[in-house]
Length: 322
Image 1 (cartoon, rainbow, N blue to C red):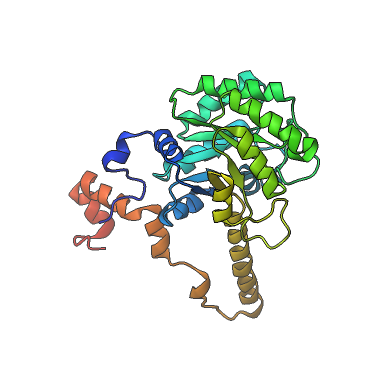
Image 2: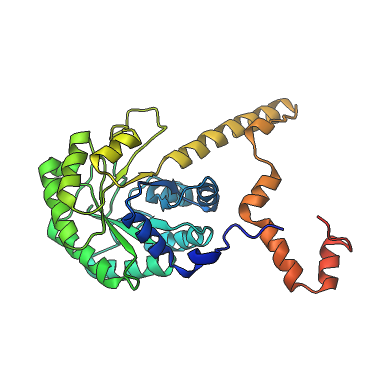
């Protein structure tokens, strides 16, 4: 039988996920991090061969609460959900910690909770609380000095020096590129390991921020979304040329899932209205694929090792072949 999907082996098992992520960041390799929001999406990202993933706070708020990302998702809800996602995969997961859930003292404890939950790093943003999705109008930002203290608090709180602190700034919309560049320099001086300018407007914005940061820069893109995005869709080779080190794609998987579910529900509605059964394997994965993705073979392997013969025979019969 195959081992469970989240069983780490070899040299990888000796490193923390934070160290794996830090090594990847320091290697100079361009990082592509799909935005994930549950066990399905995280395991699919790993199965597709991505080396890292990043939670989307907006997608988690949408999925858990059924409402928009306007700062209602709480710290404990977010941490608990991220813990489940992190433990489901081998690859390092960075998590969206919103504004840090308070002042710099709160950020200190927020950082520790996410690290204890298995995150390899966190994003902290400089929005006023309650925050909102970075591509929405109506954002406000805290004073740059307050955000710098939050970054210092996060760096002080981490127990593993490899744990990555990502400073996100939403200031472009309010303060323009000059204000954003000043913040980026301050945040890097405060100890940020990576800078995340959200809702960038142009390649020139990106180039200015990369030059000012002096640390890796990550960009959020909306590949696959047809409507005009806040940020332009820039090919990865061009992002590399601009000096960007990571791209996150927070909305692609939830948008794809919504589209797939809408089509499935449309067919369900037709079946309910007409009474004619529908067989659409083109729209669905098999139950075996779901079991494989979730590591059912690993559960069977554990049962073979840990259950007495009579218990196994009661479950599966004397042959236990399937």
